[in-house]
Length: 409
Ligand SMILES: [Zn+2]
Image 1 (cartoon, helix red, strand yellow):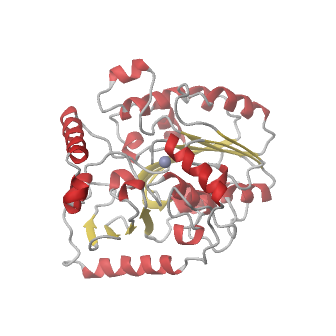
Image 2 (tube, protein in one colour):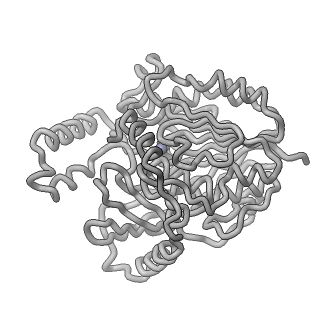
Image 3 (spheres, protein in one colour):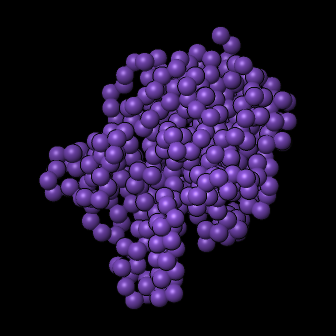
């Protein structure tokens, strides 16, 4: 078989149940999932865009790649990026990205051709025509990273979609995005593997009532300046915050993952897989040796129906809403251990792909699983490389201005 093309579509803030559930119609992504592999339990490494992509594109957890937030970090030059891996394999590499994925972050290193576009105040799917043109001109085999922003807050969709849904706009944005992807999928040459995921999930209010309560809490925090006189209470109220980056709960950390194309049989995979596994998996599917020393592993055996021994997932929350704090965590299908920089650790009982309980901290009653996850977190933390990342003042200024434009600061 000749080397396949690979389209890697990363839909910002696309949480797992947006695709895996049946409450939002996503027929185009569903068709891909039916014809290929659909992973029911894929875990993102970070709930913030730039650190998440840094893990996806290097196969390494944040202590190794060095990107521990949106601001002030750039990708460790010691690591090979996915683009560099595909260059090594003789591929033509192209990236079409947006939001905070600026060249200054190091994320685009290796792409022979890369375009960063504005995220806001641009027409819905404004990237589609240039991307279709690009696709037609790419010489095979090619690898394209396409990062799109339509599902990111503030949610956007054409007006006829917004009218049909009533969930603060998120569900309309997902439905519209799926529908508008149709011409892109149609334009792909037959020998193309398509992978779709979200860089992290999303908290959004489920009902009109929840939305109203949320708005009232937000307003009260702001008007009463709760953070000044009762920081503890403010933090508790902040748990109702929407979006992503401020936690590692299931809606924020779980994402869909679909891989479909030549040589990939139809199957659903219930086992936990991680974003750090994508780089070695994509390389393996395209006949390229992944770089050594990475944290992820190839899921190619899983795509053949061969089980892999379970491995925990390491996670970090470093969002702006945490005010400089962070949460590190580890997850297995059964358990999740969270260690916030402020406050004590918590262990939650998950239940595979079924309902998790993230309300009751069961750490005291379950020292065994907690200890194992704690040890795993320590091993990942110990892999931290000397601070090789960091930005010049000029690069920092560029990133800061973009984050302001995006409304993060
Ligand atoms: Zn994101």
